[in-house]
Length: 502
Ligand code: NAD
Image 1 (cartoon, protein in one colour):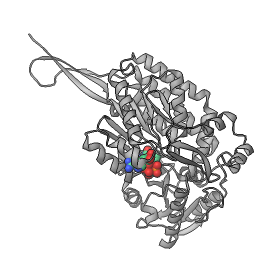
Image 2 (cartoon, protein in one colour; image 1 turned 120 degrees about the horizontal axis):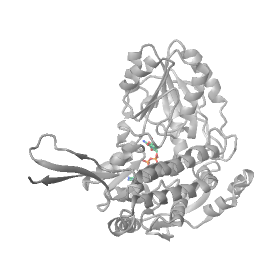
Image 3 (tube, helix red, strand yellow; image 1 turned 90 degrees about the vertical axis):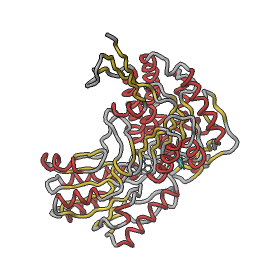
Image 4 (tube, helix red, strand yellow; image 1 turned 45 degrees about the vertical axis):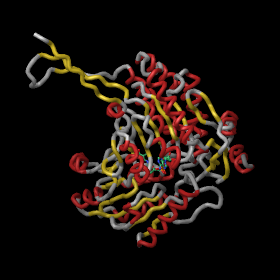
């Protein structure tokens, strides 16, 4: 670990436990065994831009071993055969263990992703604990139904069974590493599936620490397997693997398309949670100051690296000028600081590559003629910081309005009628989320059904809970994570017909 990183950790008092974990020789977790591979991938700390630690660069052979271990546990092991209440107890134990180590996990996530430590605690890790607890409860509640035949002559008993889909391949991105993993694992493990996880190469640390806890609390070997490595090698081999039953992927629309094509070749079931460019509609009847703060939070939290970030705002013409002026003033006052700094509102971007990509988009916006209200293409000397940036006077033909930037850039334009703003909001390849700000229940209830988006938020953004489903329309993906709805995506439904002879 470099001197600069040591100094950064000392300055904010990073715990010895977290330091010791980071400094470990990280390996793969396959069939309950840890194995350290010879090829290593550097992990870069985003606030300093320096090497934090290294990970094992998994191979396709490693992946095959992991799929075989998950298959063995699913076909012959105790996990799918365990009484549901016993599985529920183990998942609750895992959630308790995670909660007991919440501070350590939050520190790991903060230094791996660059995010605010407080957000890592409140959102990432608490969200993971809650998701595990919510789905643990489903282990003993899920069941089929029975019905009378509706038209077929004769007497029958017909009933359905919810059976675990099998071995699930899990591929996750780097923005909420552990929380996204829990979105996949909670439902899958509750119903008795086993998993092979490919974390994002930039941020695999929390998944590895999580596997340690799972082993400690007694989750059987082979239920959770983790193979770190490159997306183009391990990720693509997982998506194309003939011996998995389902792939669940969260990431970019481009990669999701490749994953979906590969999966379909083997009839592998799939859930794809992909990109977004979510519209925010601001009516004229809002409390302007409060809405400015909420719109800013909805795009600049986690440095804009949020799939359902409200990244394009449509503001009613009667309040547009005042709204933009106050938004500019508010956004320029946001604290951009290293993730461990207690005052951090917005940390750095996750990598140099991501920073360059965001800066390129800011330059494209300027070249396209959008009005720069605050921020701009400048970057920090140390680490991967950019300024939160707001553009006004945009239009839907601009690339900065059409393409997902996945960074702290908000594009704004005015609208005059409801009909016009609904058209503008829906004029996108994506359909992950949309937000309406209005005091009028009639505006909300008229417009929410017209928006082509998997989630519609009203008077706040990214209000997410394990009990409610999350997923996209259009190029934002297939299927749903979270909520009772997710159970349908980790099970097969079997119908059993019993003919009753007279
Ligand atoms: P990405 O698509 O580059 O990578 C996602 C994961 O896929 C990583 O683990 C990566 O290693 C792996 N991968 C890369 N190439 C692969 C391949 N050829 N085959 C299989 N796997 C491969 O995405 P990212 O940059 O890590 O994440 C940002 C994207 O994720 C954004 O588009 C964002 O909107 C999206 N996202 C969506 C949601 C959602 O719930 N809809 C949530 C978070 C992020």
